[in-house]
Amino acid sequence: MAEIYDLIILGAGPAGITAAIYASRAKLNMLWIEKKFVKGGQIADTYEVDNYPGMPGIGGIDLGEAMAAHAEKLGAVPVRENVVSIELDGEIKIIRTKKSEYHAKALILALGASHRHLGIPGEEEFAGMGVSYCATCDGAFFKDRTAVVIGGGNTACEDAAFLARLCRKVYVIHRRDTLRADKILQERLFAWENVEMVWDSIPLEICGQDQVTGIRVQNVKTGKETQIDTDGVFVAVGIVPNTKLVEGLAELDEGGYIAAGEDGLTSVPGIFAAGDVRTKGLRQVVTAVSDGANAAVSAQKYLL
Ligand code: NAP
Image (cartoon, rainbow, N blue to C red; front, side, top):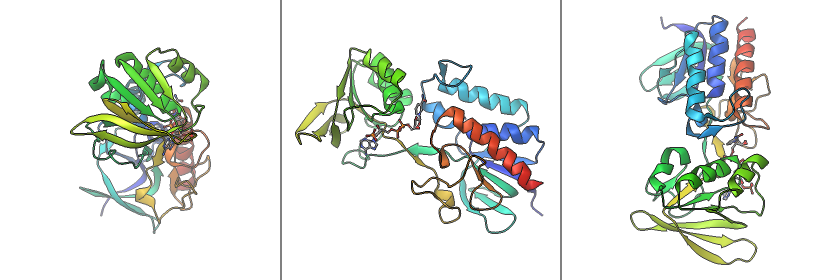
């Protein structure tokens, strides 16, 4: 008969890693699954994390690796598999990957979130040909060239400041006249002389032939359309939760996030949600790790 784990954790971002650390210390018979080679989830795409206590200015990849190394020290290493479906009906939950089927009494969903797309002409067509969702991954291709960043949140500010170090010119296109990013990130961005803000503007179309050559934008106050010449477009307009696996199985909130409180309890007994995939007010590394700890402790209580 197939092994029945106490707990399966899906995801190796900060929430999943922390859940694995807590589950290991609780000596649960645990399986941990992550589809990506790189650990750390979205922080692996972040140049620098400056608000995680005790680690000022640490590189995103370094922080992810340090967290994963901590879990490994306690014996927790994720298996690298792609989960294709989940069955939550019975007391034993079934997780199917491309290669195997796993069974567990409890499940922590630390599935994270993905980049939101703009849905404008040219975006899909030029993906990887000048359109990017990760400045730290692709920024080097735009050294001494021009880049556009779209968005007004923390990611857009961090991406634009990162690109300003490399690029000749960086435009930040934002649909309002104020940024929602943390003030410290705004100040760092505005300090760059090669950064130009394009306020009150929405992107209409990403243009080019084989590669991106420009972006057409519209000022929402005047209605005026202009074209900005650029070699790259970095889209930083927020995130969407990775809930495809649980659609129709667990309750989602109006934003599409898994409905769960701080304890991680979802609408399904034995299923816990942690990190960016969960309903919450503040999505940051520090709240993700807190979620991971809470979900692991809730899972322990459930198993008792
Ligand atoms: P975000 O905070 O949701 O910001 C998204 C930005 O994109 C907003 O400025 C929004 O405009 C704009 N936007 C949304 N849809 C758009 C569209 N269709 N067209 C044009 N603009 C659009 O997303 P984020 O910056 O990716 O951050 C996600 C989460 O991670 C946040 O909770 C953030 O605090 C966190 N994060 C934290 C850090 C850090 O602490 N260092 C770093 C990165 C991310 P409006 O402002 O008008 O809504």
